[in-house]
Amino acid sequence: MIVLGGERLSDASVVFVQKEHFGELENKKNAKSILRFFSGKYEETFFSVDAESRAIIYMGLGEDIPDGKRRKEIAAAAAKTMKKSGINNYSMDISVFVKAAGLSALRDVAEGIYLGSYEICHPGTKRREDFCVQLTGYPRELQKEAEKQLKKGLCLGKARVWAMDMVNAPGNRFHPMDFAREIMSRMENSLIQCELLVYGKLNAMGMQALTSVGKSSENPPCMLVMRYRGAGLDCPVTGLLGGGVTCDTGGYCLKPADSMLGVKGDMAGGAAVAAAMLALAKNKVPVNVTGVIPMCENRISPSSLVPGDVIGSYSGKTIEICNTDAEGRLIMADAMAYIAEEERVDRVLDIATLTGASVDVLGFSTAPVLSNDETFFSEFMTGAEIARERYWRLPIFEEQKDMLKSEIADVKNMGKYYCKTIVAGLFIQAFSMDKPWIHVDIAGTAQVDTPLYEGQPKGATGFGVSSLYYLLDQS
Ligand code: BES
Ligand code: ZN
Image (cartoon, rainbow, N blue to C red; front, side, top):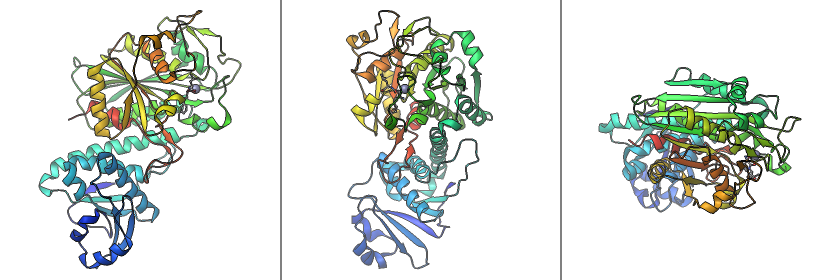
């Protein structure tokens, strides 16, 4: 729980410190002796006790006032430190941040606290929110606005944690239908309407790209459609597609053993779409969104695809299979064709853990983006800026489209071993009926083995949830 409060009620508090402002600290008496042990470096912590025997945790901010990204990170680092120390009821003075960024700092801090306090919890089990943080140091006369900003941060923080739980869920305990049921049960009492297309229905509809991958497993594929109408029915609808491979072994083009670690997280795009939509609905943001998540496993079985196969797809296009590990784009292709043809969407964004090549280029902090529409792209980047997430746009050229040409089908699921991230995006775009489009590849950013900053948990990161949310809420 995170609450707003003027007076400190708890018996421990976090104080963020810039070295040159040390003299302004409450317990000036101790300031000198604290300085002997604490230099105020970024993320440095120092434990002390004040005159009333309350624990004070000083957290260094370094030389500069942290920007938004670092505000979220330092709040996460503070929350993690408190959790590690067994303190779960504390206040946090955020005046430095409010001075620098106004009340929007509350959103960053709230999301950061959720990240830093994160502990894995299997989806479907009731999460224990075992921390109570009281935020202090904002102007009391702005209480109403402060509450509004905090609520945004809380909804997002909770949604992001939910997405992380789903991504962290073991592949053998979270099959496609479990994924769908988890989302539907969370959305049951929300303003989002869900429709689940089960295996038989997908077959009847001719979703061959999705079912051809999905029938590699005894756990059948499915596709979840979520509709949120926060604005008038005649207002534009944004389509969000999220990749939902709950277990990706690579199929017959089997992944090498040390590339298997992330296989359970190949549904992070789908989790991000569901979580962002839930946060939008909880905050009653006046927009219309249709989300689609194709869900399946990619395993080895007598009915798995093998290279050289040709399959059909919902769009009618035939696809030559060159590599069975390029399955994410196949299931996204059917979802894309479905949303473009059957749902009334004016623009569409797809997000998935699609290519290892994206990690080679941009690493674990930054996700590549492709787009064919300047207005849509710039709106997305504004959202990303508010979300404090990093993206980098890759180019699209005609000759790259040629890499998808097949001699035996309309298109093939892999080009040569070059510009693989761009080719994967262009493959999906080929099914979009030329809608304004954005493609986001979160293969590198969705999970981390080694956290990138002090407060980041290992495993799922929840990357993308906030950017999708702020794409649609820039108020
Ligand atoms: N899910 C993987 C991509 C991935 C790689 C995600 C590393 C997270 C970390 C995807 O299905 C895949 O394996 N893609 C292939 C495509 C290739 C065969 C064209 C890849 O990137 O190697
Ligand atoms: Zn794969």
